Image (cartoon, rainbow, N blue to C red; front, side, top):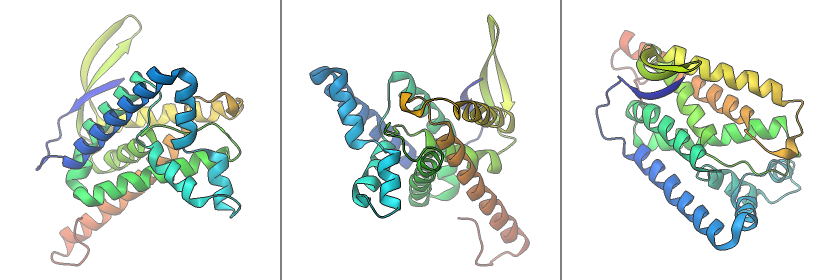
Length: 241
């Protein structure tokens, strides 16, 4: 299932979501320039310099490594992508689901949520594979946090989805609970399957997706509880963000 758009209007222009998309596109243009000028080896060095490297993060966490370099790598990695499909897929999901979360949280809180979600996702992958030298790149973890919040806050929102049935496809409207629940189930299955694979070969960081989704879902639960409290006790200090 590939989501194309949601039927969930927003009250204001999602400036932060648009800015994040623009930033990822600009950084990807830099990646293309690096690859064009120096080839795949230069691009690999670029990822090693700016990506989030689990072994480096592990060393920083236990006090034996450079915490500044590790933190820079985690944040910078959220704007790097490994190819056109990686970029376009991530930006599609960010646009569809990010604008509503930004609308719910507010612009600056959403930016903080997005970045913290990306950090939580990276740390989850580091926890699973702390000695890996393969850099983590991509906004997928932060976007997974956005999906986690969305499924909690808007489970019944209708998502126009492209569904493939063997050699046929169909456009159908599916509840967000089904679309995002199916996506998360795939991450769990693939994540468990990847535990026996050699991490040095790289690939998709499924546990970053899982960690980001869970973190975002917890924020969504908190938002729902505070909103319900505000409805029951109008004027309380626990109103919606």
